Amino acid sequence: MIRFKLTFDKDAEQDWLNGLCAQGWAMTGFFAGLYTFTPCQPGEFIYQVDLLPGEGVRAWRSGEYMDFMEETGVEVVQRWFRWVYLRRRAADGPFQIYTDVDSQIQMYRRIRKMFLWVFALECCCSLGVIPGAVLNDGVLIRCAIALFAMLLIAITRVIWRCTCIIQELERQK
Image (cartoon, rainbow, N blue to C red; front, side, top):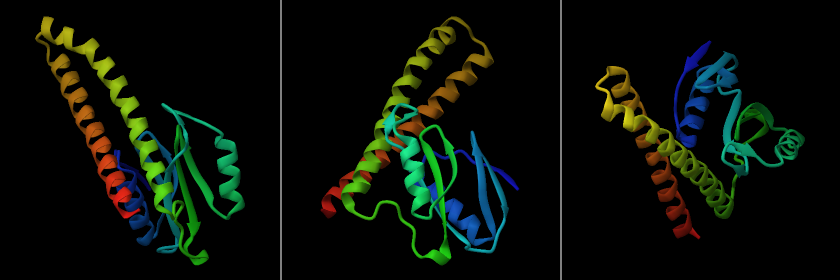
């Protein structure tokens, strides 16, 4: 089965993957919003989504990370730029990558920082569209502006959500 879903929320994506697995669908691949699933025993796997350390879309020491995960019995299902999709058999017990507050804060800071970088890139790209919108009255330009606006709103929501989660985690310390 192939499903299309665009989400910028790591936790919602993770919950969605685990929900589909509970229904008997195991994620086997991902590319640009297209998820591939194969049948499995309901609840056979527990999925985690992580953002590798790095800058922009470039990951640092990803090979070491992947090797470490596989050594600990975690299967790396897919990597897409810095996002990595992980799973472990539910029979092996609970699966959570970040168990302490400090590591969770660091993860959400990485996500926020990456989306701030994407926000800046998106703003630069949209600057090229706005002059065309002023000079032309075309439907295509209006659609491009609407698309850029929706992306900026989605990215802003992720940045805001990460900031709120970080603040809540810091209060728990």
